[in-house]
Length: 418
Image (cartoon, rainbow, N blue to C red; front, side, top):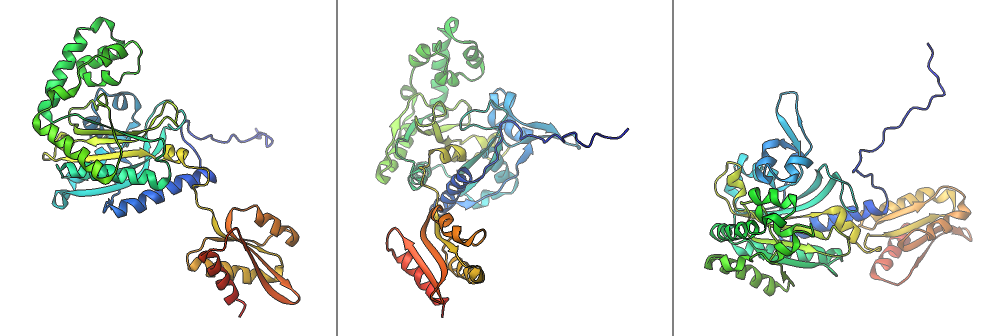
């Protein structure tokens, strides 16, 4: 039976919650990554690469079996060897696993940074995808509050270099040391048990497994109970108070503004001391643009030795959405080749400009009479017309302002005519 040749072959669609990027947003995305790479070098953070796939146990142990990420959102599958494998939903656990299995304790304290794709099966919305991308910075093997302070100064400078610090606030809390946290947890359980009948179903489930998470419940039913719960301050040991004081003193010394948020928590027991978020109201419900904290118990949870550590992560897509319209770099030079006999000279000129660090493009196809008009529509610092006038080759240049860069471009182009 012959096939109907007129039948249209169906085109596979992108997986829901993923995105293809081209043009402006791809440029914004790249600008965030390039800025991060530049700033992390200023702070001495080494680049690290870890696998996209890990044994499922890496994340089950680090994130907790009962969390939504592990129970509902992870992309996990059994490979052909029968091992349970998971696409990474976050960076920290994989970096902690690498620290243990590669014996990187010898390099402690280790300052590392990376970026790349992560995967979570959740409802796509503005700034949130099933394949998303993050920047990540970690300090492993340092129990000094100066590590926390420097990490936060790094984050603050990154946001300023991106031009998005306006309207973004650093909120900070302490979760204390183990003794502080245990005392606070017991007081919270007692408080929430006294209001058990008024809690939402989600909070009732958390009460037995993860009571600290009730504090940041979004359910209106829970808010009065959570808001009246005791703060951690009454349970802080003197050591925990001193640690938090040293972190905030470091931020003050570096000129980084911060606000205390006594309701900022991390539910898992391996989190200690500093917890923080940079928040904004410019992204609707998804207000956190960068967040992290100290996780002194994680590496021990993964079978390693007791190891102090602190880190943060930031969504690249969310940062890109906050960039100003003119934040991405425009071309240094756009060139219109208005005579076909000059195409090779135009190519040579573009090559010469690029070799000394100027970004340059040329328009040398289509009607020669329309090339200049096309070039004027391209965002560039310098507009060049390459043409023949009175039998001579001419580079005409235009720029909004005379700058050292535009003078240098002019000199390079003039040297090509000799």
